Every structure is written in C-alpha cells, then in structure tokens.
Image 1: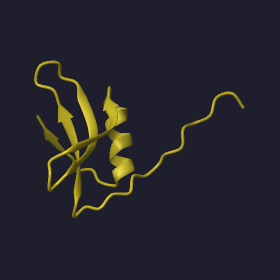
Image 2: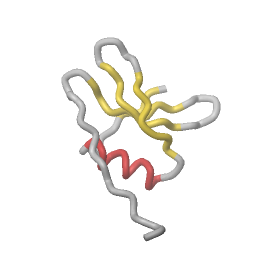
Image 3: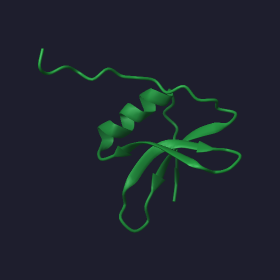
Image 4: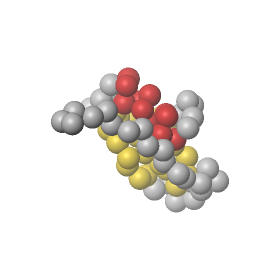
Length: 71
C-alpha cells in the first residue's frame, strides 16, 4: 500500500516534571509544540505547528486540550 494514514502516537511525560507548551516567536509568528522542563525551563521541541490540525494532533499526543503559549 503506497499511501497510509499516519498513526496517532502518544507522548509519555511526567506532568510533575514537564508541561506541554506552544513556543511562539514574537518576530516571525512561528509556533513550535513541545515539552518544557518545570525545573530548568529547558524546551524540548516535538513538532512545528503550521495549521490548526497540527495543534489538534499535538493535543491528542499529550492528552490535554489546555496548552499554554510561551514567548
């Protein structure tokens, strides 16, 4: 089969150590979804957000609809 629907995967993370966030660039408006370490503030990039469907996909991966934006 040539074209397959991509499987939805889930991201396992520890909510006491990390939080899912969208990092937004003030200059370009680029949005990147990822996990932010609560202790160090370090950001781990997971995917770029090009359109609304990408955001919905990320929300399904982390299992939450409430995702904070950081700048």
